[in-house]
Length: 442
Image 1 (cartoon, rainbow, N blue to C red):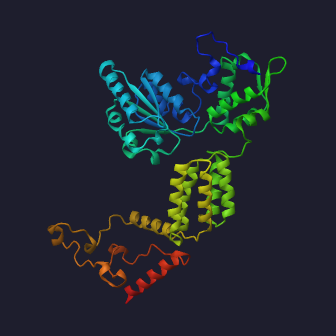
Image 2: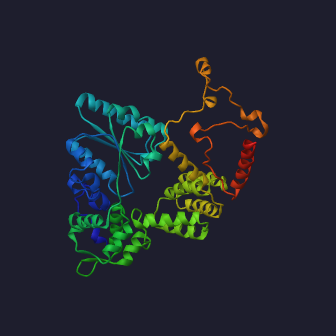
Image 3: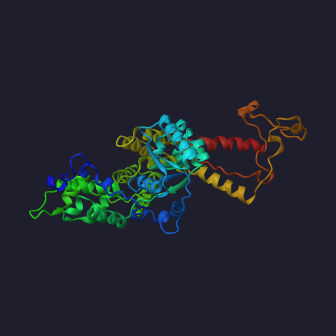
């Protein structure tokens, strides 16, 4: 079994078997890169930019194992730039500044570009990201950040505005199969042996669109497989499962399964069925779904579907998102379960959602309606002379801290957008508003 990976390199040289398979077969030229046709196909934006050598700072956003690091290296090789790679977990401002200093020297003395690749850039804090702003804006370094998290939430706005964001997709089964075939035929070790994979499609399914997981799983399965008498190797399903330490759960994180399952989860929460919600959430977690994606959707539901029927729902959901970010899996599943159970069991109201939708519709159909004079701001004598703020009534000086006066534009003065239900806390809100409304009618 061990002779499959015997060391054949001479003494004193790097022995190939010590290098993981995923690294050994990493593409070295752009045409070897598999996947991301929407970015790298003929005439597509990123490919055109690379071929012209017109580099801009960018964020590569996508799940693990889709080629973010590989693509960054290929770009650097193609344009012959000085390439530096930092990992956000182990690097800080000091390392960033050292690369920036190198970039300044390259630009000034060698007329050479410097690419700073930061893996897991979403783990950089605000101060660390701030340290990049000037050098990125001035072109001292070309930043390529890699992240599995939505950069809109994880990268500070000033840095994000200086970068283009390219979304990378999980690899399809066909693309993974191409990578697998190349590994079996071109790797220095594997190409020397006759290797058959009994359940090839099963191996691709377990990889979940992740090339690194595919190649690591294959390598482990080969270690676990005893060669046949003729020296050939047949990798069977049992060894694949042992390599991945799991059986396959039918869940595609980007295809129909992803959208159907999250839809079932949200509808179960909305429908006040905590048991169904728990099941669909378990399906997602077991299939490798990002727990922060689930938490983020619950934040939305807490406002859209629970609303003021139970205002604590939004507080709990946002706390859940923060806790999941702090804790990570597998313990995050407990926090997600607590929040899902609460949201499913909570009273429901979509009154706030309906109110803002109706208000936005009026804003768009009746644009630029003037603010009534009495509620305009009047910080100067000129504005006061124009009757800004005149006759404004300060609510706290009246009974129940309420006084009748017009706040909406004239065209909409009798409009009611928010119509609270008689469910949960919103019932109290409705009763109070009705009581105040009656005062208006006197």
